[in-house]
Image (cartoon, rainbow, N blue to C red; front, side):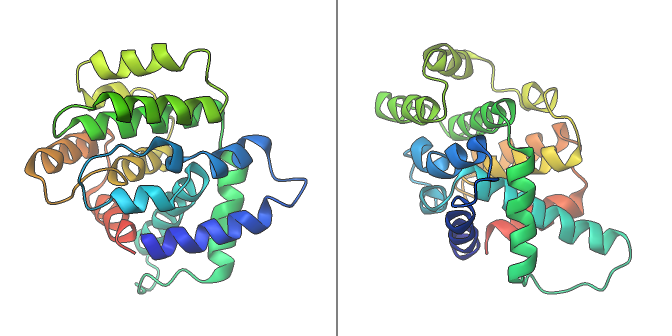
Length: 212
């Protein structure tokens, strides 16, 4: 995922010069995950530092398209996302990122980070900073306290998801901040996949893409 995220980030940088690139996507590219690092010791910590909401949405789109291809009888291919496909992924992110989606993905990351314990004050401040960068300074404290004190129930996230593609994005966002070898986080991700009604092969495709 480090390599894939880096490639998507590079394309984001080029597209941000385009006046048709949405203001929300620009904010998501700049602030994104980089402003929301949840300082756990997980193996994906570096992935989050390299990413952004726009790149994250694009990566989930790539995984979903690959899964759809195989589901519809397409030839199974290696995870080789060519430049044109990556460009399509970033275009998708630009067209679909909204304030509501950004808040949902942030909530998903906070919940995933809570799966192995607690979020300390420094991490809380980083989340606050990230929300502020994305235009949510006024309600950041309320949102964070709500997420930190709410029951760790994946159904809370699933109820906000509008379709299977968005479910894939929520799952990918959660993957970006966990340690895949930690049993508590593994258990949480399994519960999340069930709450999101992710088919097992789509779940596997998202996890494979996250390793790129």
